[in-house]
Image (cartoon, rainbow, N blue to C red; front, side, top):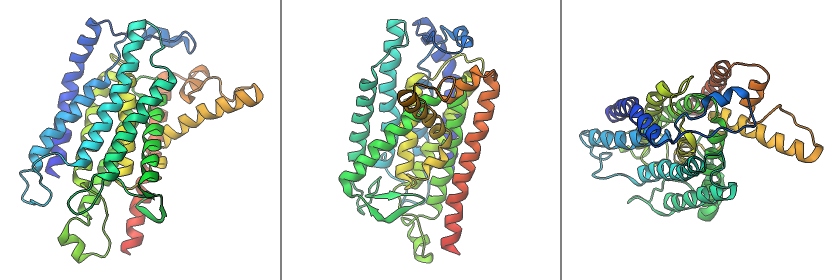
Amino acid sequence: MRAVIVAAAVAFIVSLFGTPIAIRVFTALKAGQPIRTIGPATHQGKKGTPTMGGVAFIVATVVAYVAGHVALTTLPERQIAQEGPTMTALVLLGLFVFCGVVGFLDDFLKVRRRNSDGLSAKGKLLGQLVVGAGFGIAALYVASTNGQTVASEHISFIRDVSWLNVGKVGSVLVFVFVIMAMSNGVNLTDGLDGLATGASILVLGAYALIGFWQYRHWCGDTDYSRANAYCYQVRDPLEIAMIAAAAAAACVGFLWWNTSPARIFMGDTGALGLGGLIGGLAVSTRTTLLSIIIGGLFVIITMSVVIQIISFKTTGKRVFRMSPLQHHFELAGWSEVNIVVRFWIVAGICVAIGLGLFYSDFLAVMG
């Protein structure tokens, strides 16, 4: 627990005090967010607000991981205190950083061209595909000394579903799909001050709880597994909890400056990075299908875009005034703050249902 608290505290402090530095730097570089002319008129007032703010909480999370790992190595339980970063940490932080790099390239091109056209849709998807495939291979093919891998060959819900074995190649494909789906889901949710940041805090907080619960009931803990018939077959759950908690706390520090009226936007740098990390957390905790519920807000907003496209292409009519869904409510007359707070409530309900299902499964097995 000490390592998780240390990582979260360091992440919050670095992000809270580092974000103003990012604001000054990106403002001096004239890295203002281009605003599309199509959309709610209120967005035009945000023109020039610095973007790429995701750099602040990505850096804060990496720094916090180092601090948390230092605390981890001081624990008396030497079986979980390691000299260097684990493969789980490399995969999760790698997804966070390199999905963020794809988003950074998109943001950079938007700023340089002074319009909202960054990377092409194909270019962005290709970048996500390469990152997802690279870390998916590492997650499936690089095992620890006891043969445990970061990801599993099974499709998982609350734990691996025994009859859904898709093999290593199939699991890499699933890994890539989860990373791409979640990163694009968070990206689509971004667009209102604090919306994606607040929703991500809730989801990351849920995964911090899941990771720590799995650590407390971990098959790798020989004392626990000998005394209990049921344990979680995951790799490095304490580090999962530490990284999730650090990222959540870093987002809290960033939200101080990102809430309405935003002083800085996370940009695709932050949105793609957060989505990649959340997808990695889902796979590494063996809760791939449960992530659809935990990240329910991202799924709802993504589906609003899919429904809008299908409806327009097949019937020529739009279901929503504008997609993603948050802009539909803007055009319906809701204030930005009302939309953000109500969507946070929806995200919180989804997280609560997901955690409830996770815990009820534990009670059912242990009972």
